[in-house]
Image 1 (cartoon, rainbow, N blue to C red):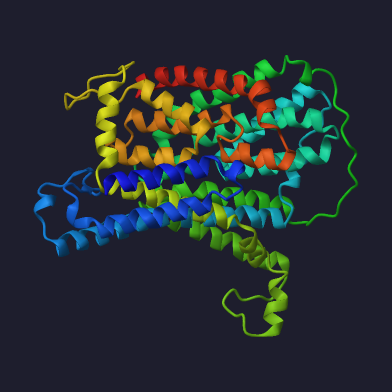
Image 2 (image 1 turned 30 degrees about the vertical axis):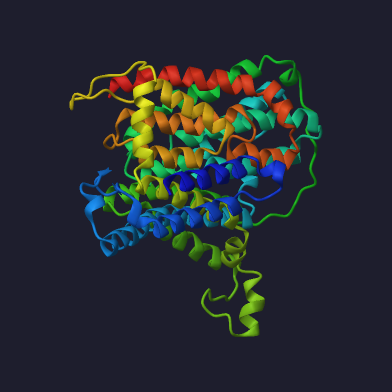
Length: 466
């Protein structure tokens, strides 16, 4: 039965990676393999001899001697445990996405466009790279990419020039998302899973992530594509909300408040995100000057007003397919973790991989190889980094703020830049600008690889300071 579960996971995984070839949205195989994996566990529960205790991060003793009812009860408890942990991430993402959509409703991101005064290509490159690095740490790398490419489309006429900027924005956004607990889905997973803390994450990864952005940008600034001046399109002045700047600063401040709320109250991050969303929604409703109740959908007047409510509008625009994909993939990985498959795989992986730059920990055991984590980063360029990090949560069991978790956050977050399909930021840029896979591989991929390796070397230095 274990072999069947692994096969279901492998075929589901392949379907996800070949999304563009088979023309099936990746959320569908993710949900299918989640349901089938857990169904096979339920049907074959009597035949399993080991079970992974997620709360204690170790295999249970004497699981094989338990009765059928006890095993089934344990499976239900484990399923509920994983669902709770997964929903923490999903609710957090829903809140963050809604706040960003509310900012966009008031055209808040147009304020950023006003900062760009120069026509020199290399200077504009640095402006967009630094904006991507900072914004992705606040509003996540996917959203930062969407915002900056949208601004780029308004000021740059020539698409052949624009795709070069888009390529460097992808690298900078992924680098910026790696050092912030709210900057990338995978980093958020590690943060909510209590593997990294905000202070240590910034301390370990700020310099490596900055170099991962700065080195490719510096090299690119000497390439022919970024020489000379840019013909900036004189856009027609559009009427925008008088509250646009105010909502931008309020929304970004509300998202930044979430880690502070967690440090003060020690509550899960999604609680702080819901509070931030509520505060932003209050001001959004006040500024929109509409009468709308989120719970009253009976009257025609309420339905008509709903179309003008920023909160209702924003909730209707969030990426629900992405949320369902995360649900499917995280719960499918949880099935492999519960059977102890990931635990066994981690042991064999560490035993067979050369140990580079490892230390002997206080417990007397050797740490995970740097090479394993670097390969995980390269792997995240080929396949989605969310399941890779989800798998690492079940494979490795080092304590909170161990250097391993920070290295995984860096590798998974920035390694995806090497291929345009390797990160959410790359996929959305590919869709917005119709960037060719092989063009990106040839022109941008090597820059991303250089940045990734320079940042990795920098991390090996910064980890010695903690």
